[in-house]
Each structure stands twice: as structure tokens, then as C-alpha cells.
Amino acid sequence: MAKRLRNGYGHRAFRRQAESLRRRTKHEHLPCEWCGKPIDTSLPSTDPMSFTADHPKALANGGRLYGQKLAPMHRRCNSLKKDSEQTEIWEAS
Ligand SMILES: [Zn+2]
Image (cartoon, rainbow, N blue to C red):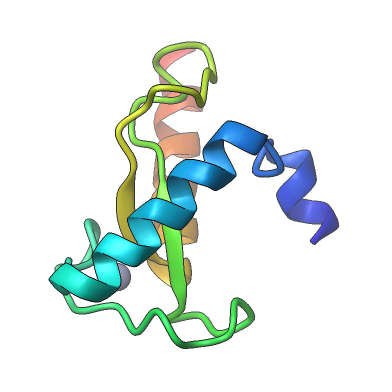
């Protein structure tokens, strides 16, 4: 939990958007943006295959979360993606 707050995931607008995306993911069976497999939204947030909402353009836009188009993603895939993004940033600068 503390880690999520440090990453800016405690943002109120983001949480609202994430919750509505979770409902859409459940009802429309949206796949994971990273691996393309279905997401079980009933899994506990501690499960690596549980639902997370990713904000693809947050880093490019200076970290602004509000108004971002969120994508459904497995917790495991979200952290894999973040690892690769971090690598790109360090290589670019
Ligand atoms: Zn995935």
C-alpha cells in the first residue's frame, strides 16, 4: 500500500477512473493491454493476475493522471511494463 502511494496511485481522480474501468473490464470482458489475456476482476489486489488500471501517457505528459485514458492490465503485467518504461527513460537521458 505504501508503495502505491509513493507511485502516485493514491490520486483521487485516478482511483475514480480506475474503479469505472474495473466495472467495464468486468462487464465487457476487456483484455489486459499488455498480454491480451482476460482479467479476473474478482481476484484480491495482492494477486499478481488481479486488475490494475494503467495510464499509458502519464509519464510523457509529466505525470498528470486526470483525464488520461486508462487501460486495464494485470498487476504482474503493469509492473513488467513499468520496468521496461524505466529502462527506456534512463537510456534516453
Ligand atoms: Zn496481462
